[in-house]
Length: 587
Ligand code: ATP
Ligand code: MG
Image 1 (spheres, protein in one colour):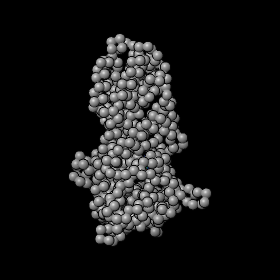
Image 2 (cartoon, protein in one colour):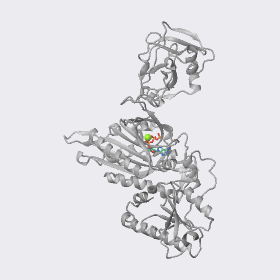
Image 3 (cartoon, helix red, strand yellow):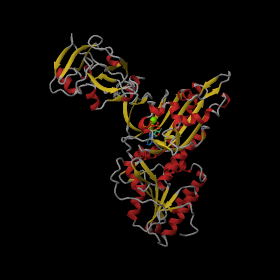
Image 4 (tube, protein in one colour):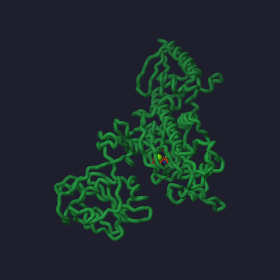
């Protein structure tokens, strides 16, 4: 290698980026296929990935954007152990509550530990003896670290892996108003992060899940391939369907008394409605599950809606759907469940919208039969009411009444107001201004770093490969000499690479002795935002070809104007400082 060459220029002959011609057979989503094919990541086992140099460069860029925006808010970076003592989790109650996603291990002295899925316990324990006075508050501490969750079905590459990179921040505040302020700061910082990453995202109301607390929002990268469904309205309302408010128009069935009707061959709500000559909304759909204590429940919603398992958990704590086997054991008749004549001990919950419906159409707990006109309060009782339906696109917005729109998304971040859940459980108090001991109010704020990287690929790709936004690209420009070693082409390409590097760009030169077609294909696959192609024919006219990866647009640029662009870059970009932002404008 030429010693005078700028060491900051990346060289394809040196980079370990084994690209593949074919999609890996076990990749189930575009981002996983492309990241593996481009030699950025490698699958080690289900939900476990290695990052190769180019992938790690992207990961670090995402990480640094997150770090910079966290630092702007005054949050301070820490690093906590990945292995956590079981005692802390027993103190918070989550050793039992967390379930099998928490991977538990025992050390050589028989002490129990877990691999960190999140860090509320350890940080609460850390600060409880250190932050003593209201004068020390608020404090917001964050880390960027590996998390481990033993996901039941790791899939979609980096989007749902078992080991993944997260930024998690925890704030300790004196009261709820102070948490509100930190929460708003975090929300604004997250908006800046995702904008800098070039992501299309939407903020939605969300479910607190395992973390608990009240008041939480998710940041959704919009993508058809996303696992999350969301609804939104032009008035600004947006929610994950797991929490989206829903007010179905349930209909009464016109009947004077309850009657058992034979409904042979009727299996679906649509068939039932047709058989009875009524709207689906005039029937009730049943769904079975059990609560945290193992009690069996049957839930009812209007026939044209579905039970939302997440929302059901708020009415029936710890709600889990029953398996077919469980249903049989509990004496439930699948496909014919109704509130009249359920087996002893089975409880009934129903959607709020059914409360005003006097007579229902329901299964008869007898295969091939339904009850028509079953009277609420007389023929059967309901033990619990609540909003348990999954909201539909087109339903009325709970804020303004206009029809809701729908989209799919990838949850890239979530922020929570935790209140005093962890501090009370773990006795983490501070001395208030009036001299009394008070529990901390807390907030926690997570960004999926590795998931964000994959979400960006889901948003920016085409049939040739990835199209990185410049701020997170493994490098900004790829200089491609068409004939390596050519005494005219090679020095010009090297010079362009060096000068662009001096101007503050991250530049890679494809100095491999490969055919032009191979280089173009790899450049498109890896997705460098800009390609500068240096060939003999262009040079004869004093030009090179510049291609914008995102649009595919190619322009012939004179070496003279390239020199001017470099000069401009030097003045504007001040090398090293937010060059990526500048670059995104130039590109
Ligand atoms: P999900 O609902 O997708 O399982 P979560 O709500 O359990 O995620 P949080 O506890 O809110 O996740 O964690 C913060 C962030 O960490 C998430 O917003 C997401 O970006 C990321 N994350 C969570 N689980 C995974 C995973 N299995 N793989 C990659 N990233 C993840
Ligand atoms: Mg979440």
